[in-house]
Image (cartoon, rainbow, N blue to C red; front, side, top):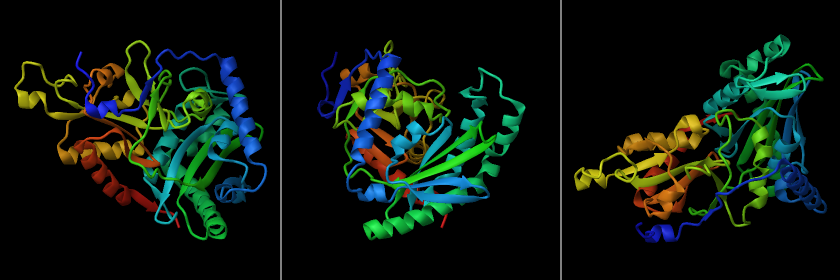
Length: 370
């Protein structure tokens, strides 16, 4: 086995592949985290808390309420189970990055869920009452969902602007979560939006841990996942930025709990060129990431794919493994999400070129709301 390269000696991976968590322990840690949130909300409000907005329907109109006690995590933990998507603003909180993709994801996630009385399940497991299906029809199409989402975002952003000016003295960017579910009691669909100040990482480097099994139905943004990943949130180290999900049997890395993962490898190490191929072909740089059928294809992941095409950089859909990392087969690695452009686990020139193209494309995919 080859020794670790210098770049990977700096790679902060904590490999915890024997992950087993009982539902009882998960419930207990979830309740503890909520109690900590509630305790932290006593006393003087922070600027972030003072600028938090919750948008919900009020008859034919929208209410935009200041909700200082409700951060994003608590919102998703305590709200009814439904389909959700997370967005970020651009241009002084007047536009949304890649709104079209978020609308399609929300509609597709609702198609992949069944709301059956008091239960919610994946679409292949139970039948949905016809009345519920009829009520959800307009939400399961991105085209008919768009006016509802845009009107809610507009009301929320106007209130967010006023609160930002009042408490921060300036307009800051916002992170937004839109949640849709069927309200059995009210016999209709509900759409809520949560807005709070966005904090973009100031460093290009991050630390990750690797533990926890891949999620089921990754293509469906089911808010149940936020509850399921509480184990990762409460068990990772305080200075860890992300947890990568990994198969315990094969050591294959799928994705982060809220990000996509990429590794830079040589063609021969990625299985793209045989060991008998010419040296130049074997050492060609390629980018490796899990196939979209196994992960949630994020908005920035799509931009990375565009960057690969422009750079003529082969993109290989296969799993990078922790075995690859320990054997020194990674030339670099990074994660992406809607809130952050590529942030590296280990540096290389290829990642710098990808980052430059992604950061340029981000500004081309903003849809103005205000």
